[in-house]
Structure formats: C-alpha cells, structure tokens
Image (cartoon, rainbow, N blue to C red; front, side):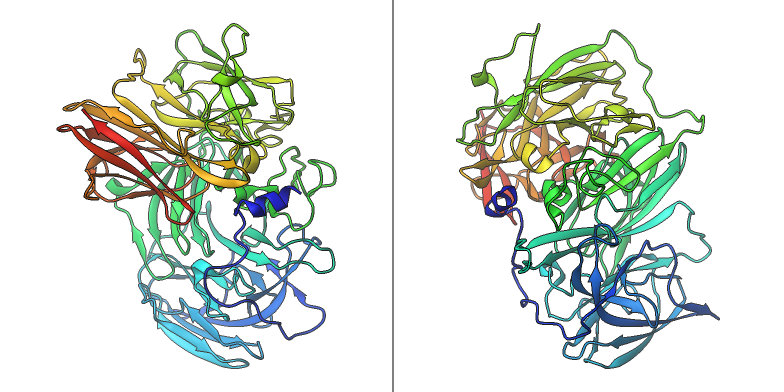
Length: 630
C-alpha cells in the first residue's frame, strides 16, 4: 500500500517527540461541528477603547475537507454562546486598545494553559492557567503593532511537538498601528496541523492533517484579485512543523517576521523579495505582492508531503471522479493535492502586466522525463534528460538531478517536455515570472477555458515563456510531488543576462534533494549520498548556487577543519539579487527550507581543505561536501 510505504520512509511523524498521548475525552455522544474561521471579522465587542471578548474552550468535530466529510475530534475555542472555530476567534485591535478577556474552560478534567493574552511584546513564561470548569479574567493593553497569536495546551505539549487533540487551540491576534486603516485586500491565515488516530472501525491508519484557516485543499478558500492589486497577507504558523511557503508566478516581499510573543517589522532596506520563505513552528510573517498577471496561481507549503493526497483522511478518489480528491469546489480537476494549498485567481482588467519584451530567436530545448539510474540502488527513481535531434540519451547517462538548463533574460524559451514514464507528470518552473498556463499545476494553471492538464504517458507539452530576470531558479515535478520529487524529478535552471554565457569555472551548483534507497529516505547532494569534492583555485572568486529541493530544513555552512565558519557573501535569494544592506558576509549557518535558493560569493584564499556542511537537524542525515582550494 502506497501510504504504508510513506510511513516506512518516515515522512509521517506518527508520534511527537514530547508531551503525552491523548486522553479519552468526556463529553456528549454527538459532538458539535467546528466551523472554519476565515479571519475576516474580529471577535468581541469594542466600546470606549476597550475590547470585551469572552472565550470558551470546548470539544468538537473538525472536518478539514468537505463540511460533510470525515471528521476528527479536537479541542477548539469559541466566543461564548457561538460555534466552535478553527482557528480560534480573531482578536484584532488598534494599538492602545484595552482588552478585557474572560476564558472559560468547559473540560471536566484538563487544565488549559494559555499564552498570548497579554501586552506585546510578551514573555515565554507569561501564561494564563484555567482549571477544569473554571473561568479566568484578564485585562491588559494590546501593546506594539504586529502579527501575533494566542495558543493553548491541555496536554502540556510544546507547540513544536503538539499533534494531539489540543493542537488546534490557537487564534490570530493582530495589533494595528494607530491611524492606519488595514487594506481591504489584507487577509489573515493560520496554519494548523494535527494527528488523526487510527480508525478502529475502518482500519484506516494514523495520519496527519494540515489546514489553512481550518480547511485542507481542495476545500481551502479561493482568493480573487484583479491585475494591479497590491495584496497583503498575515501568516501564522501555529503548528508543530516548519513550512516553506511558496508563491507561483510572482515574488512577494517579506515585511515582518515574528512569533506569538513578538514581531519584528523590517525597515525598507531589510525587506527581501522571495518566492519561498521558511516559517518555523510558531513563526509569523507578513507578506506583500502585486498581482501583475492574470490567471490561476497557488501559494503552498513546499514540503512534498504537506501538499500530498496522502493527507486525505479517507482513500483518495481518482482525480476528478467525485469532487474531493482531485477536484476543488470550483471544479478544477486533475491534481490530487491536499493540505496546505491556497488557490489564487487574478482577473484581467486591461492594465499592463509585468512582462519582458522578447528578443531574439527562441531558446528551444527538449526535456525528457524517464525512469533513471543513479549512484544508489532504488526502484523509485526517475529523472530529466536533454534530448538532441530526437535522439534519446542512453539510460546510463541519465542521472539525478536533471541537467542544468540555461536561459537568457528577455529571450523566449520553448521547452518541450516529453513524458516517457508510465504515469502522468507536469513541470513547474520554480521562481520564473511567467504566464499562468505553462506554470505547471495540472487542472489549475491557466485561465477559464484554457487550463493546463497533466502530461500523459507518451505525450508531450511545450512550455513557452520569456524569463524577465537573471538568476538561479529550478524546475521540478508538480504532479504526485511526494513520489516524483523524492524520486528525482528536479534540476537547476540559471537565467543569464543577454549575451552572457554560463561560466563553469566560476560557478558551483549544489542541489540538495532526498532519494529513496531500499525504502529508506536519504539526503543527497547533486544526487549522491557521498558528494563529489568541489575543486577551487586559490585567489579566485566563485558563485555558489545552493538549491534545497529535499524533504527537510537544511542549513549550509562552509567550515575549516577546526569547525570555524568561513565567511561568504550572500548575493541573491530565490533568483532575486539582494539589496546592499542584505548582501553582506555571513559567518553563521544559513537555514533553508525546500523550495529556497541561495547564492553566495566566495573569495577563495590560500590553498586549504574545507567542508561544505549540509545539515538537516530534524532529519536522520547530515552530509559533508569536501571543498578543496588548490
């Protein structure tokens, strides 16, 4: 069974690393249904500068998929006398507002430990403890503007470990600056994650569920914008996992990062343009982007498992057959994703979009998708290969990752993808600002009446786009991501300035991925568990292009034998050159999530032996790449 293989590979952490197992919950035989909270309307009653809010903790049934779909037992918050919500009721006030909150714990045998109902910034040990059946009262002034949240536990489990029935006890807490009216395009999203126990009646195994504002794709909200709209989002990761959040087709600006207790709002020179940003457990982020081109787009977590159809709480139906596995509420079929995905629709208005003026003859490539061999023994590998003049490369020449594709800024690209697998596939051009149709999400990318479909076995598709900027990008599968990306369907893509050629002497590509060997998941660098040495010449300058497309948070650091870190200068993130204030030497390990790309400049000094440390602290692997300066 496919899901059992996923369990064996350790992609589904069935037991947390701390805390206690869930206890039986006393309560009514028929539980109330929990409603999803879109975080549009603030809770409570505001009068004379005081927000009065009455919260209750109760137990209910959450349905992450369709409202009438499979449910699971969780604890949740509600306003007194109102339905339970996941996430909890939104607290939103202007700085200087006094908040008068009461919290009632209806549970008969569990104490609620609640964090976040206090002035901002706050302290980690600042808690409100509410005994079983008790009510507590608290009054405070909101504090500094920012994106925060409140969260509770009844099991004593830290947030970074909590997958139990109290894992959904969180809600957004927003403090707005005085005199600033929030944009009508601003939205608030809370990420949740929990564990559904094994179903003794059906035999369905334990599995995780992941939600955005209480729902899992394809039941997550569809967001509608018009070309030219400036979009502002506030994100709260109130879950036990990190999430690298990736936007298709556009860059977004990170305006602040924080936690439930504090928020750091960046000055303009410290704001960065990204297509993927790693949010740690308990982290927050505000983001802003411009909807420059029409079409359907997605914003999703870039962990393959976190958008996999293995997150469905019942056996997935074949794509497009009955409305839940591969088909959203808007009828988009063909890609059986689940979990942390938002669908975005940008509608045309006649305004000019962001597009590069094409110049020169198209760059024409033919990319073959096929089963692969690699330096490890596995039955689950597949790869990309370039094919010239319709001649297929020998199987032995097909390695992982796929070949480096070089394109030119402003020059049209025509890449024909030929599928020689025995299953459908699709390719996403990660980080490229392109039109929606070739973006590569089956059943979604495109516009009404012209929606991209998966490339069937034996068929082909030609992606046509003109890259508007030079930088480091990548391409990878966007169909059955859990199997196809972890099977090797990824490769580097570099866009050059007009007239520039790729300097192999000055560039070093390091692509971190994950591959399956004998039903065990391993980290690999450039397709190898024992990476080949990187050879450098003394007194020369090199550009390291670092790609993370694996299954884990991964840090990079260049070290000497005494473990001291060699300084290198950050120059780009996700293909976008960094502004001067951020393009500075780094002497600390740099943490990345899947989908993030970093460029560093290294001035190689005198001859010496170094190690590029590729460390996944939350995965069972760590790799060391020899770096030899001669």
